[in-house]
Amino acid sequence: MPEGVNLHRESFEALYQQSVISCGKAHAYELYMDGATAGDNSAWAVVAVAVSDSGRRFLGCLGGLTEIDSGSPKRIGAAHQTNIDAELSAMVFATAFAFFGSEDAQFVIRPDLALSHRFLWIQSTTRQDSVLAKVLHVLGESLPSNIAVEEVRAHCGDPWNELADSVAKHIAKTGVTVGAVPWRVVHQIATSPLTIKWEWLRREKDSYQKTMPALHSDAVWQTHSFCKEDWSVHSKDAT
View 1 (cartoon, rainbow, N blue to C red):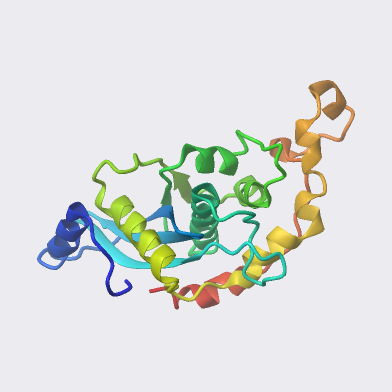
View 2: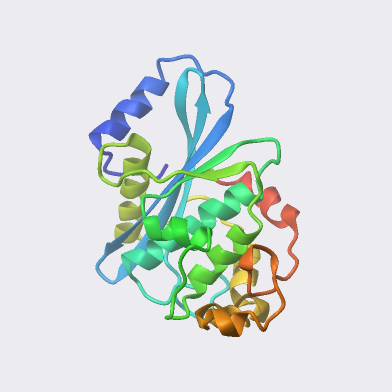
């Protein structure tokens, strides 16, 4: 966790409690996320929490500024320095972290933005050609069975959601990134022509779509191959 983060009262209490209770074996991992803006900057943050019979325990966090430079190797599709783009960036990284995590572990992604959830499960589409939304579509299309998504209410006192909010605000204000992010895999998905080539079909009428070959889960694109090890090797550096 970066120094100088202004902790919410509930987050402070949860972090203190984990220092005085015994740490049991984790049976699941939760990933909380949030986005924030400060001046001309926006930032995203993901907080990892281990869930055991004795409670929840903070493991670490990732975070960075929202990258909108089309030529940057760190760009994953954000187009503007807005809270929505920051929130969707956080959802992309949380999903990718869980996607490329251990197949034996159970992950629960906890967004506080309903739009993130709907984009992941392909329940919503966008007419603004949002690459971020399409990256979430790609990840959601082949999401493993060991990953669940449960929304959490924002700014309602959940200690870990509040912590993600505090870290995102700190990064937006200071520009200091947190953790080591393996950008290459997600950037490759975002910049692949196959990711966006067939997305326009989603906006066509049902009668037109019925003329096209049926695809699994009503998908309308083809995804390129990527290597699981590309993410898992570097995810150990995220603290």
